[in-house]
View 1 (cartoon, rainbow, N blue to C red):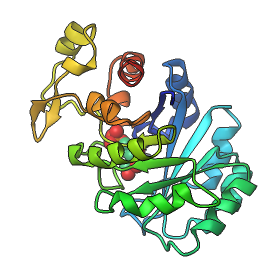
View 2 (view 1 turned 90 degrees about the vertical axis):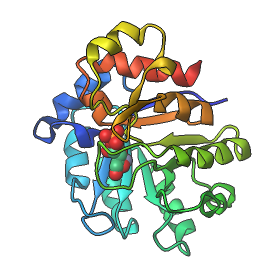
View 3 (view 1 turned 180 degrees about the vertical axis):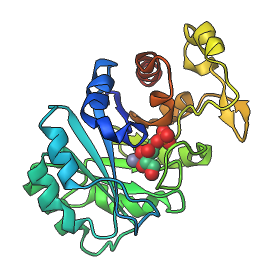
View 4 (view 1 turned 180 degrees about the horizontal axis):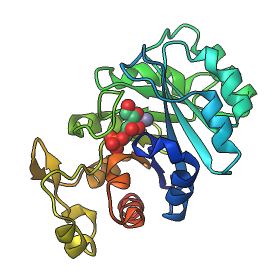
Length: 250
Ligand code: DX5
Ligand code: ZN
């Protein structure tokens, strides 16, 4: 069996107050802190690197779940290992021929290796990395184009989660959608119905309101839930985190 891991994406946090934002999320019940590391080349955005992870590590013992949207992940293994990163998830779209060496190096620095796949990449691409001699320990299924938070959830990605769950029952499968992006949604309504669980919560889908994405992701088999805008945008992040956990563990 797998356990739920709720990982707020710090991309949506106030980077000028990263340590206190991290503490706030942990006090709201977060299991992991999802750190989006972008190089401005693999994705058209530039965020943080090892120096920031190193500084944050001085303020928290939390699991730092680093998501590397970078063209040369091998370059960052040493610096991030030293900085105190906990998880190191690279993208399968980078050169696949040296992924064994990459996974080996990640493990040798005491970090947990994971692989991520973009919406356009077929799920079969990651099978060799899960089944290989030196397997990754988590697969991150992107349900938005990497680079920015607050995008629309792509429900068609749930087929990849289902395939992975069926093939690897105890694998950690992380999804990184914009789980609940409130656009024309009133928090009063949310608080009114939150008690009856996420399944009934409507979220924005193409501007309208559709079935909850977290329930969809959880029922497809995802157990690690990354969310940025839906958590940081909520008046009560603890409420959202506990409802997400409930949705995965029910
Ligand atoms: C996107 C990042 C995600 C993103 C999630 O490139 O990998 O982690 O920050 O944030 P939301 O939940 O706002 O889509
Ligand atoms: Zn991410």
